[in-house]
Image: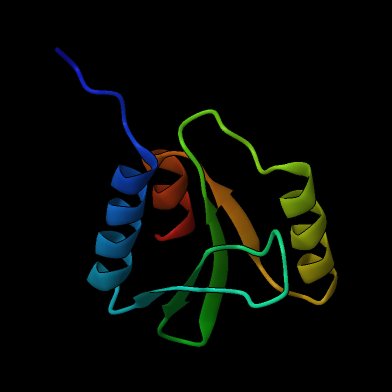
Length: 92
């Protein structure tokens, strides 16, 4: 039987890909701020990405999308990641 991919599988792959590029992934806990991304990916060359992890086909909740928009207005790179393919596009 084929097991459906879980959000934790996507997270594990994100960490492995970032590490392969000599980067780091940190889980972020926001105090007093709802909807902010739950991971930050740091890569050599001052590359920094905020990542919201989701199960395949799942999108950001409305309150998350609003916070992502606020962050993007400030020049932050925020991505909603729901598949291994998206990680491969992001972390080349």
